[in-house]
Structures are given as structure tokens and as C-alpha cells.
Length: 151
Image (tube, rainbow, N blue to C red; front, side, top):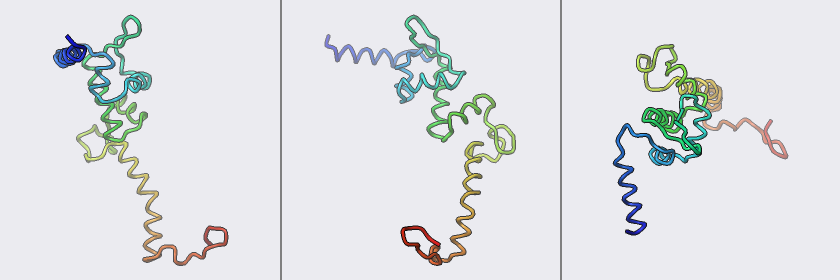
């Protein structure tokens, strides 16, 4: 049998693993489409991620570990949470701005996203007012200063 055929059989065996089987770090990294070092980093940042470690430091992830990692990946990459935001969600559970559990509040944006939206609205409001007051040419009343800048 050739090496390519053996690799094909190996991949087939991996795909045929039962849903309750433990996964290696390479299998989990491949499934979640993240590098292995990211999974190791997440272990240090999220105390809830605790794979079994066997001889030689090999990691074996339980199905619930894989689901937790999938959730962490979704929160970080798809929903835009920070590491600290995900830590808070995992520790406290998702909260809405009104303090209710996720799903019973206003929906749409997560708590972290609402904070960002409020901060952005606060920052952008003066610029919006300024551009409306200045009319169609916001910088028309400013005189350039030699060497750069405006008066």
C-alpha cells in the first residue's frame, strides 16, 4: 500500500470517530480551523478549557471541550468579542444591557456590542453635529497655516 493510500485510510478513520470520542489537538484545530498554538493559548486564557493531558503532555479533548472551544471561537471571530469579553460571558453568562439573560432583552446585539455602539455614538455625535453646522464643506471656514495645520 502506498503512503497516499495509507493517509487516505487514516483520514477516513478520523472522520468515522464516534461523536463521544476524545479528540487530539490536531483534530480539534483542524475542525475549528484554528492553529494548534491558538488552542494552547486559549487554555491559558479560559480556565474552563481543560483537556486531559497524557504522557508526554499530549492533549485529549472531550466532546464538551470541543463545544466550548467552538463557542469561544464563535464569540471571538464571528461576534467580535475580546478575550476579556469572552471570559466575562463564560463566567457570568451572556447579559443584555438591561441586566436580563440573553434572549429575553432587546436582542440583536450582545452586551459587549452594545457597549461599543454606545461608545461610538458618544464619540461620533460631535463630528456629526460639526459637519451639519459647516454645511457642505466642513473645513471651508478654516485657514491653512504655513507648515501644516489650520487656525
